[in-house]
Image (cartoon, rainbow over all chains, first blue to last red; front, top):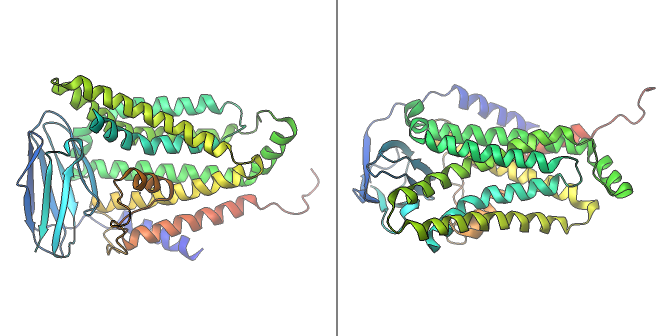
Length: 109
Length: 273
């Protein structure tokens, strides 16, 4: 019962908390099923907003288990990916639909 | 071709597993085949629509539309699974008894089928929209598309075969136990979905609390491996769960348990009918 109340508390929190104000934006571009840049340097311990621009005609799925992101970016379209706060380290990501070529890494430092 | 097969199979797997469990859970309920087909059909149709508007959905809510959409779809599925389990806790015994005595379908089960049809539909919708986008991408790129397309279609077939495997595997469980086994499976399924839903909210910029990672078992079992994906769907396995995900997971299981106990409760001596 207590857990249920905690859950309800969270539900309330979720509905009430406003989207936080974010400091800096980062951009990743997908072209010919490749990411540019392949290395994205970001600061540690803060929320990061990455705008992923897909210049290919076909969709791509931005995926990273370590960043806990799974997001489809439609062809000729853009999407917003929110990650962090991150500890210092390397966080690889892929484009799941073209895993052979679409690879990159977020470096938090 | 093999690559396409694996990508599509990985996407279809989750929906396939859910359909298999739902079919086993509604064993012996009249008209369930029709409801499940409606769920699958509606899901495929919805997947095509979602894929078509993928760009627009993504742009909505300051770029968080897709995450909020996924979170909502998962949350609705969790509620439907809770409803089903509560209903089953109340009526499951009668259905099992009737199945034993007559050995035929029972008519009483019309109620929870809408709930489960919605669960099936949402599962197919969520995974299916990614498959549609992926296959469309292959189709649109033209060159060497045919073998990739064949791989993709084989992936869908493999997913469907997996549904059959899940279903017949669960049917091997004796009638006496099948409802309690499927109730447990559904409870774990729902808890995993709730934990996923809250992570989508986090990705959308909401629920940014208790964000610390509790453990990292990616070195034992990667979430993107087939087995990892299987466990991810089945019991909500997450290689790096956050505190919030863990709290929501346990909370969902607890809420499910309380709800089922409440639903099963009947006064010992009912008043005159």
